[in-house]
Image (tube, rainbow, N blue to C red; front, side, top):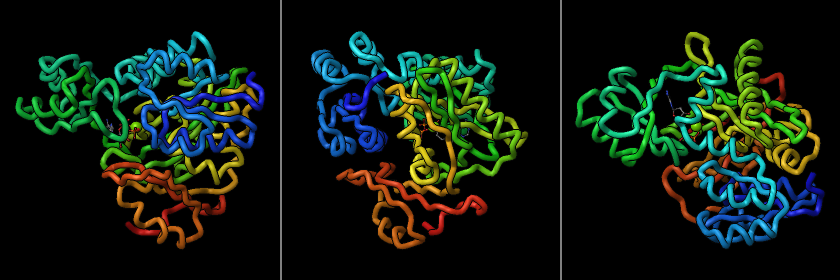
Length: 366
Ligand code: ATP
Ligand code: MG
C-alpha cells in the first residue's frame, strides 16, 4: 500500500503519462517523470522530471530513491531499467508483463500457452528464413519486428513472394528479428481494458470498437456492437492475460473478431490504452484513475459506464481542426501540448458522449 502524499514514478513522457499524472493528483499523489525528452507531454503536469536515457544507471538509481512506486506508460522501456529500479522500489506492473508484451514472439507464445487464439505466425530470426515462413503463411502477410514497434511502425505488408519484395520487407522493418503473421480479413477490431489490483481482484471495461488508419488508431466507439456471448469471451481473454502475467494495474488486449466469429489476440498493451481514453468521460472511474488506484494498492472501482462514447484521435495535421470539432456537439477536447506536428503523431483526441440508449458516432467528417 502506497499512502496518499507519496510520489509515483512514471517511466515514459507521452500523453499516457500526462493523463496518468492528471489522474494521480486528486488522490493526493505527486508524480516524478523519467524520460529522455525535456519537452515531453507529461512533463508539464508532473511535479518533478528527470531527463535522462533509460540506460543511465546513476540517473535511474537516484530517481528510484526519490519515488515510492514506479509505473511505465509504454512497453518499450528497456527491461534493464526495470531490473535496476525493482531492487529499490515496487514496479507495477511487474517485469513479466513488460518482458512478454514488448516482444511479439514471446507475446504470441504466451497467448498459445494460455489457450488464447492468435493469427497463424512464424518466427523469422534472419532474412534467410523469410522465404520458408512465406511458404507456410502465404501472402498477403505482415512482417513485424519482434521489438520496438508502435503505431504500425516496424511492420511491412508483404504482397508477393518475389525475393526483391522479401528483401525490401526485411530492410523496411530494420534488419531485425521478426515474426511473419497471417493477414486477417477481420470483421471488427475490438479492445478490452482490464485492471488488476494488488489483492488480485479484477475490473473490466466493456469491449471497445476500434478503427485503424495506416496502422494507427483513428477512432473508437463504446460499447462495441457485439453480442453478449462475444463480450463475455473477449473479457475472458483479458482476464486470462492479466492473471497469467500476474499484472498489477491496467492492461489492454487488442482483438480481431473474424468473419467466422472467432476472437484472435492481436497484441497486449501492459498499460493504459489509447482506445480507453473515452473512459475519462464515459465511465465513473477512468482507466487512468483505475491504474493509479491499482498501483498504490487502493481498492479497484467498478467499471460503471455512464454514457456511450465516440473518441477521435487528432493525428498530425488533424490538430488544425480541433476548434471546428470543439464547436460540434460540445465534445471533451484533450490536447497533448506537443510543439511539433509530425505525420502520424498523436497530437490530441476528442470525445463525444451519448445516452446509453443511443449508438455512438463521430459527428464530423474528415
Ligand atoms: P499500436 O501501437 O497502435 O497498437 P502496433 O504498432 O503495436 O500498433 P499492431 O497492433 O500489431 O501494431 O497493428 C496495428 C494495426 O494494423 C492493427 O490494429 C490492425 O488494424 C492492423 N493489423 C496488424 N496485424 C494485422 C493482421 N495480422 N491482420 C490484419 N490487420 C492487422
Ligand atoms: Mg496494436
